[in-house]
Length: 311
Image (tube, rainbow, N blue to C red; front, side, top):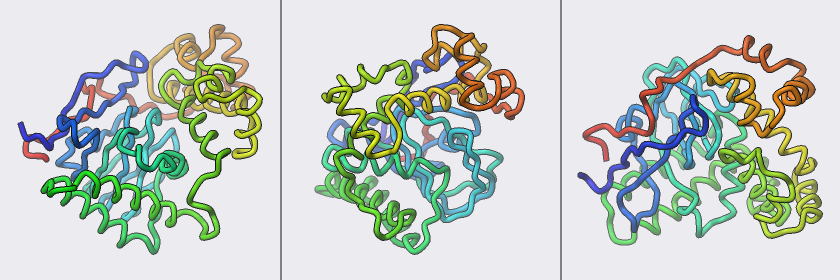
């Protein structure tokens, strides 16, 4: 087996119907990281069914028609553009033709040297597609250089890949952020980003404010202050927003019953969940499901696959 190749691995489902794709890279000194074309990474990099990742994905779309759907928000493709998907988000490619570009896959461990990039990735993943503007050429060159480093594995390539990924994230921020927006997040922003990562991961909506504060090593009161300062919302409000989003994902993308959706969204009482959902969205869970178009996946496909001749 080519040691540069990403390998598929069966993954436990986050729900009975919505698959969770995991990334397994056979080079331990490389850490979890892969880059390549859609063809090189494998057919599931173009998956047209809703799914989640346990890893981060940055996609440089250079050609094709169709749309990218991220957490139920659909945007038409308009290459060149960047799509960023973070762990726990639900996404898929809708009605695409000729989808082309490069895909970067990596786990959080790969960002240990630049922890501030985690908050940046969350900001970038808030929209299904990013227009690159004046950064288009620089970002395209970065993707090409990273792929070259990954394939040739010249001495010191691990450091080059980490540094290049950091530069890529900064340039992506420049493409979508006003010039006066700080690129280095403040302490409140860092804590708020860590808090949102905790509640966004599979099962995270079952956490309370107190339990997340304990995991982050701060008091509930301090967490309240920092999160409110950074986001304008309380931790409890963000948990409720995440619960609503998780319920929408499951209602739109799975065949789970309302009772099952309630449990996955962190509610013991289905009746209370229905009241909560109607208060937050103005619709009943059943009404919301009837309104959205279902796009159910092929349950036989479990994880990211790799083309036989891929890297």
